Image 1: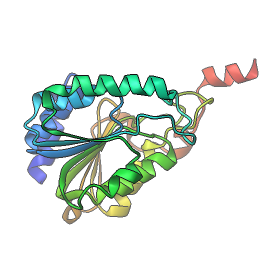
Image 2 (image 1 turned 120 degrees about the vertical axis):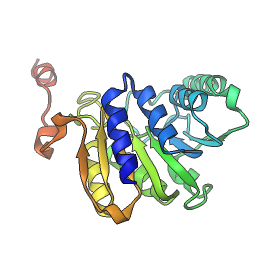
Image 3 (image 1 turned 90 degrees about the horizontal axis):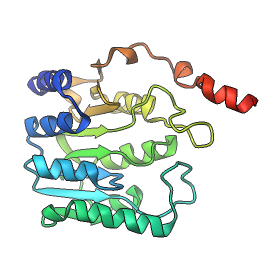
Image 4 (image 1 turned 60 degrees about the horizontal axis):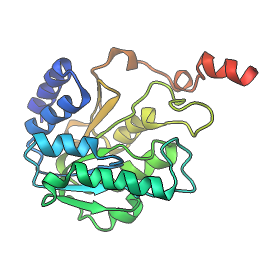
Length: 232
């Protein structure tokens, strides 16, 4: 596992895009069975299935409007049907490998065996409620030594402005790793990676210096452009 940590650091330091970084990490970790939470248009699934030796890929997304999700991507039902169709078209070349669960993470969790996955990628509901449910429900689906990664590890909770619920992937993913007593790596491109390896204990590996010593009150600060708008 320490060799994998060193390899991930080298990959993160040289990768030019988010997709290239994850493709290299998944290949290095020999990920064969994985799940993605929050598939949306299917671009990430397409890139992974096209570049990595994946045997089974579980795609979890309700692709429907959710009344308690206050984010810009919460479209109406007809638009979600279009987005779902796009995701299926993008991944049709790997139809024999994909397992589509058109439901919430909570509904999907009962359909996935414990310790059956090498990797889970989280890019769904980034609110505090959403990231809590996603990490908690999917962690047990990973085998020992598995990877739990995700997107939108932003340095401001106001990712989508004050009209939408704040994004709490950062710092919650760090708190979750501490609770599980496992290491977490802060990666470039607003990504994070938790290693399900309790023998290593909790530690934060900052591969992006800006996140070092970042405090919650700094994450909560509203950008000046939003304050100015609210004062108009």
